[in-house]
Length: 337
Image (cartoon, rainbow, N blue to C red):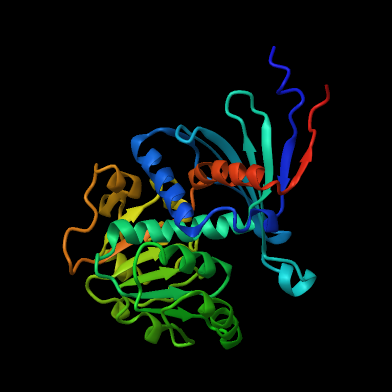
């Protein structure tokens, strides 16, 4: 019997412990690896589970997964409470990530998942742009200016040399705060606009990161050759894009099973505007070479990112390794001797 496991402790990591351990470029690499393993079938993952109560606006999400390389198992538990900010002064979203050793099931780490999720979610958009956008893309538009926009900006900065980045929010105060905080970190100009059409028109890459329940990005604003990463829709009924965009686009998803109910395509599918036959495939198939991505310069491509649990299990091993090396967090013995 290996007694070293009985004496091992679980590392507990807060948001500030996690921040800065992994670079934006490394988050992009981890998420790309998650999609590669998905494309090769070297994973175990069910679509995310949802618990919705009429009593409390919002939901819980359960996201377990196992990945072969780097071999890891993790589960993220996400709490979304839509009234938290106004009623309690709390974030709308809490997430906790549990990282376990595959062979023993030992809980190696319990991590705050907020910064982790912001970065790995942004990295999903970045990976899609790397594989599906035109190689000479220069103008990025980010629809939404919350925390997810920060991760989107940081990771998309790793895959293209942007000449201009446009940011949209309904709130001028949110826009001002975003640009004030983010502009010093980048050499290209951040152009804030409360006019969504102005922000989107003419952009090479558009990333949507809002909780919209009705389409906000219109078909008429999308030029030939645009790549769109639709990131915000992650539950049934969510929709950010005019369905007409999907009718003329080459559509990719992260996981077909999950996208049916949670992704940007869920409403157009349910309404019969598109069918699953209209999907080219999953982005992992593009990365592994099983499916072709962009086929023409003027083609519109759409990536429906629902946020899959495999992104978490592909990323947390590096975060854990860096945390141990940096000596951050608190160790706690979770099993009795």
